[in-house]
Length: 288
Image 1 (cartoon, rainbow, N blue to C red):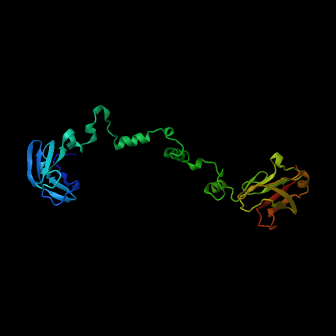
Image 2 (image 1 turned 180 degrees about the vertical axis):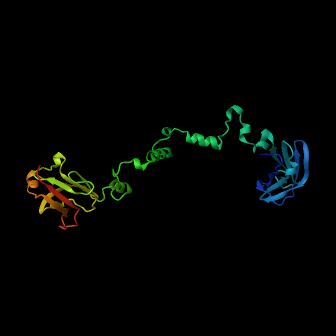
Image 3 (image 1 turned 90 degrees about the vertical axis):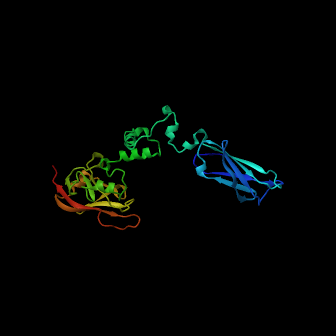
């Protein structure tokens, strides 16, 4: 066995009689450091089952050498009266095992580790594109960087109804967004007698509603000036588009004036009529 200088050494010996561990023996030990006697007839401790031990104090382990112990007994019943034990101390630089590993490497094969500042610089200067494998932390950081400014995202875009992105997209339009001939700011509708207002021409009356009602299959109408006009509904809950086409004959039948209007729905299949989806003012002007 191998040990370092100034560490205690424990020698062991196992006595047998007829092949079985022999107990109750009186055993002494002689210890040598190389050829130099260190202990003569030292008292041995019985461990048990035929095993005996002797501890050489650390103060006696003073130099590199082979430390040999000979356990001795005068009992004639044992298979062998003298038993040897051996320790190797300090060979091949064992006493230096606690030294820095860098001191044991060839200088050309050793690279000192980076300090804190150099490590930080290496991380911060790394090219993000080189660390973008699917599922890696690098990919997550890259993805977070690409989305670092949410105000650059389109709203409401693909944001679902009820999310902050969706609500941001509705700022400025309140509950209803409108396009010509419906005034965007007020929802006021202006029509000219005898004119066509067709979706195919981009001139139809159109509102967008954030109502969460299920308008699928509903009967929706534009009610104004004592008349009722059918409306088409597309989209989904929270993002409905309501469109009304008017023919020249229909607008010619409207009297010049200003009227309140409502866009109302009769739900299917319940037949219930909720509050108006849109309300506003209709102005009918003379034919030009």
